[in-house]
Length: 181
Image (cartoon, rainbow, N blue to C red; front, side):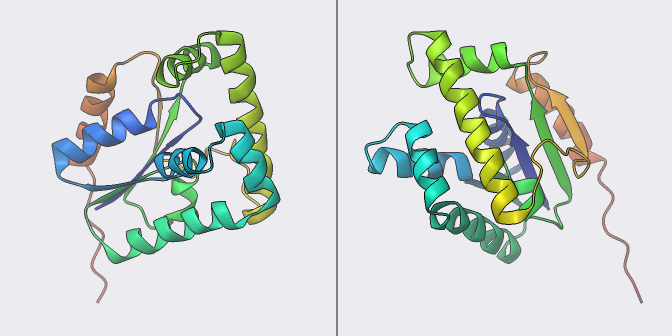
């Protein structure tokens, strides 16, 4: 089984992905964690690193290609990232997590230890705009087009266990692909 979990920054994709990986024994690939690690290795804030990636597509394309390659080689894998639903075309379940900007900013400020929520919001919105431009430019992907997803959940309404329970139910009801003769 191949599952993708996507959503905007602070929507809870990493938390849900970890839950699903632990509860179902999936291997997990996280584009966001790879991107954050690269920013840290370059001693840069995420927004600044995003601008660098905007100038040099090699960063994004390397992460995206690696996710696609690993997912194609394995079963029982969960791929988490903004574009994973687009990149893993044959995924059995594609999930998009949504949360309003205010909710996401609170989570991001806590996670990234930003004391001023206005700064966290400005950085988040700048990052989202930068990423949306890159995705459109590199792949002609409109990140706001949710038509490819099987399940869209508002993560403001449920904690990770609640979201996990919903997705657990969806996983248990996925029909195996039909055999062709």
